Length: 303
Image (cartoon, rainbow, N blue to C red; front, top):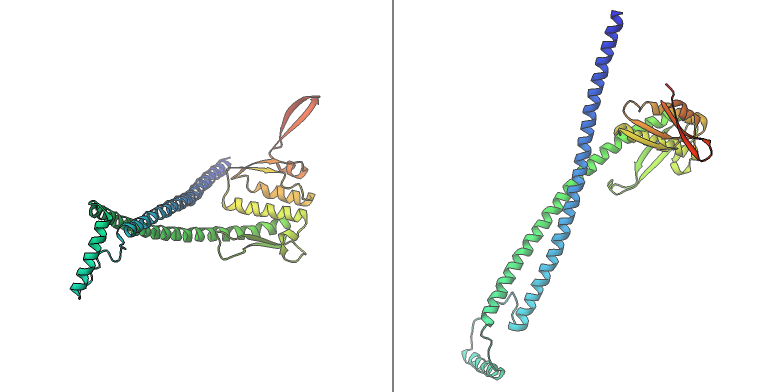
């Protein structure tokens, strides 16, 4: 009796230790997921800021163009020759031109005495807008660099997780099929945008694309991939809606037995019509109609 109590005590301690380890793993996984989600949010915010900066940049360039046009139309000056003074060599010729121009000015009528002040304001505005444009371009370059760095981090995290899922997928596939092999592969070097191909080789068959398998083989391969993802990222609650409907009886029992391995970490709600799956359940719920138009819920604890 004392030995039995000691064994029970050790089992309880081991269960508590495993429970604490699971809690730590869940916290680590949750932290990783939160970091990835936060990076996605930051990435979206940065993209929005770039769009705003590009829009503001276009507006500044338009205003800058309008200022340059006004400078030319009203004063026949460009930003490059505003302060460009040439040395006078033939003074008499210049005096004749000045006299002619003055006559033309008198013929034009009254002079706009505010032209000098307007020019100063336009020049000041032009300098300000040029500085703003340079600042916006510098900010845009910095944001693009931040996005590039974040994409590298996301790509590394994706490759690490994909490698683990691929390994789990091969192991679970072989266990569910009783042999064979399967693997995942990326269709392009751009891992964040490329597709994923599934190749499977059930026992006694050659390696081929998943789309060439039979309906039951496709279903069991998909189930293996689902378990591979759940193994790296177990959810506290999972609903499975007749995912084994296309399987034969032997594979239904294999699926049900493998499903039990996850019940320590995941609570499953399985919708099914297959007897093999029902036999593996802890509790069965069903609907019956003893009287016409009156449904009744039945439950059975198989343990």
